Image (tube, rainbow, N blue to C red; front, side, top):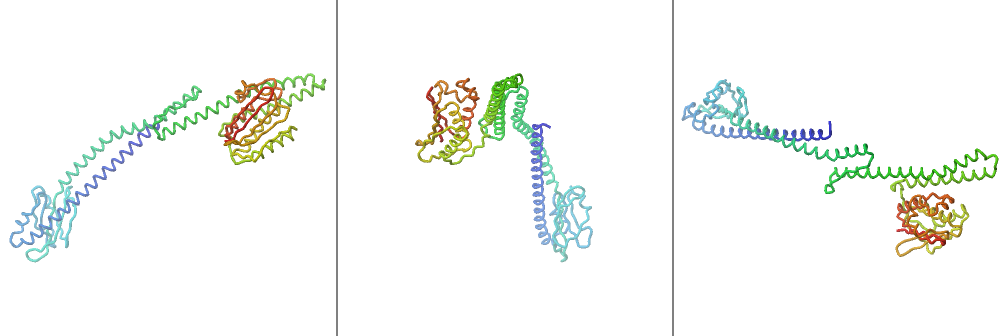
Length: 447
């Protein structure tokens, strides 16, 4: 069964059940009140009649006295202890009551009785008779008027229930359509995405703040994530196929050359091994960089803390000295601190130091300082520099200022793209300035 039909059925059944429960409760409460009211009124009348009969029993004959107080639709009688039938007077409409056996009660008695499928209120009061004996004055009154009123009430409540079912069914249909509409729209959008292969989003009513709009926003956000990840996947595949083609071609060429002449020419053997090894290393580094770029920013797992920039830079300078035999001069005054992710900052600094090492054979200088509201690290090299027109493009993926030089140095054009991603993730601003033939200056600013 579809959700819309379920909502329609369940809400209609629930409303009808509640309506029936309410109407049945109303009927039984009202019925009980009317029965109690009839009983109280009959008891009050019987008490008054009992007092009058006791006062006048010696002055008026019993039949005349009872006939004077005869109910319009009932019976009044005197029952003496030990008698099955007493003296009784019955109204014309209730002649069948004269055939009913009577019982003597030592005290007051009142109840609702059923005789010949009709309901009566029965009240018995003990009184002192003319000869001094105690007898029962018993009055039986028909409740036909009350039963007619209850019958009318039943008809009214049944009619109200039936009539009320119409708006209940209509409202439940409207409600089910209202709830199912955005779900239906979401299903149609999913099917359209499945058929067309294009990412689509739901159109939402921004004025509404209910759960259905929230569900739609969550769906759109999920589509955004799927599209972003799909685009990253496509970009990674495109980048990998584009960038790995050249090193694979180089490796294949040198491997074929080794296969043909490697054993005959030792110099060619050494050259081929060196080229294959170099290209393999470059492929590994490039693959790692592409995988890093393929990550979504939420996957960086940033853990910020208060760090000493002087200590971090001194540690990296020592690593470069041992690994590449390159000196990194650090210029700093007081200890400078910033709030950042240590590992990501080291990775960021490594990229810029590695570029300075690759494209400059001279001294690398690093300045650490503090402006009025920001700490900074400035890295300066004395390499060939970058043309001013090329500076806005250096953070684009696979962009190279000098493709021949970068290929020789082993660059992939991904390093600065990775640096930009890391800097954005740890809230570091990058400023770059360069002059051809003089070198490049990179400044990292910490908020």
